[in-house]
Image (cartoon, rainbow, N blue to C red; front, top):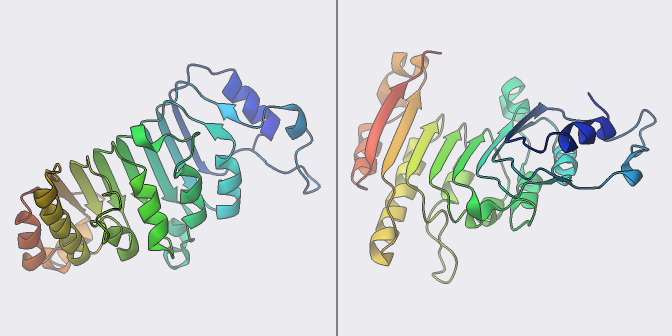
Length: 246
């Protein structure tokens, strides 16, 4: 792992950088003694990456992730990928990502209002409001990909209970899903379709279910029942089923 100073040097000497992926750990934020890096006080606190359009961030430690995210200013951000990498090793031990979602919501450094593509993998939160506040900022989002997502996140995609509150993801057109509860998704998308029809908002156009071969071996109905499939199609979306090779 590079020191924070070394990492800043890499970033500041790459002004044309358009894509950045950090998976697991980035720079060391502490020195060997456990204190703050000795270079932190003499270097700019925030790293501006002016041309970065795509940011992929896979975290294993929430506290570290929040500190690292506070160091970036991404004014040109258009595509965002977030993943709880620790969930791959321990699916039952997924972290509460509420604290990670907070820096993105309403932050000048992360202009979510201009993000058009979002990919969330194994992201969990004990607070539905954390997801609601996050999605409210994504007013231009067109493409959403969800993998291994629980019902709390799915429910936050539904229309607001209070009509004075913003509608989440009003520009959403395409949705890709993998390893999530189809019944909850069908209920949420049905509610969105009804709300969009009443309000004159743009409806969702397509939903793609990505299945593992084991899903097919166990029977498609175990993942997507006829009832849920019909409910999704009744919303007017184009429903596509895609089989992954692995």
